[in-house]
Length: 387
View 1 (cartoon, helix red, strand yellow):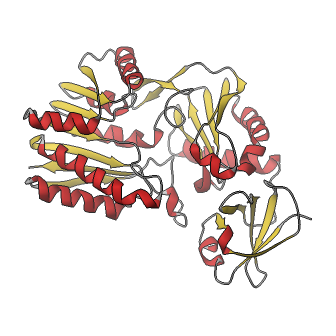
View 2 (spheres, helix red, strand yellow; view 1 turned 30 degrees about the vertical axis):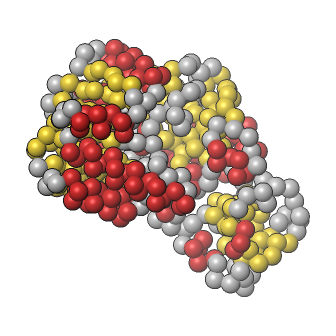
View 3 (tube, one colour; view 1 turned 45 degrees about the horizontal axis):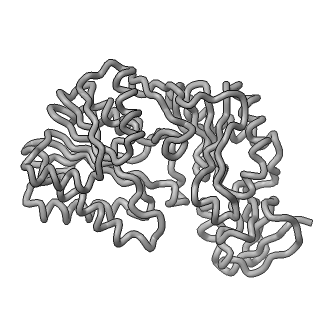
């Protein structure tokens, strides 16, 4: 007999509203017995069936619900869910590179699958999904016949599930760099050692939108492998791509060469220090792009992150030419849109500049956000006009 999990009174409301996570402190009792990672049934305090999901007593998230009817987690179920997720992206016009499966938003919590041309990269972020990755790979092979599947489960969140960080080849062959085409630009994606699964696909439409504002001389901060830099280079006179990682800057130079761009130069350094140095030199730019990594990964870090976002945007506002643009982003769920905008407002007041907000966007449509799960909505993209 598998586990039956009974919630405390009224704890089912959030889950019925679309959230997937059942926290251990929301549970009144657990009946039955099975192994960690098995499929458990979840019930409200009055006995109403809520759903089924993988259980893990080692995690604060006791159950991640992904079935809300009488289905089970067999191969046919995974084939259907992955096919549905991919069909959604195809309807939106995605073809060469996109997020194929986005965890909770696609009804498969803790599973990430990204497509880079003929290759797939997978992240397994929970015990239940990790135990079934061989079956998931078989489904991917049957559905899409990729040349290779690579695992990038080298993320710290797995430790909360009692799992080690791992990465490696799961199927076929995968080159060190996979070539993709994004917004008409060729990009080499470092799927084995790049950040996340190799590239930030969630900014694809935002990088295209940035072309409207990337005139004159552009400073792209936290440039990573150059997604914003290369898009800006299609219209800008000059782009300076800045990052603290020399490997990232090598990727920028390789991608620039791949596309024949000669108007991109790289600058290695800490972005905070670099911006302050430009301010001291009275150096200004027509457009500055700020796309930093998450400054906070837990709620406890929000206060320090707020200061970081305010500081970096304040300095950037001071070195944008009059009439120019600041394109600024936050990818942390905990830095909510309201809080991020408040930091921008404070930075604007203290900068002594007039600042207008001209465009606000979020993550790309291949990263849909489940309305009942706020964690799936995380990316903020603001375009500010500095007067």
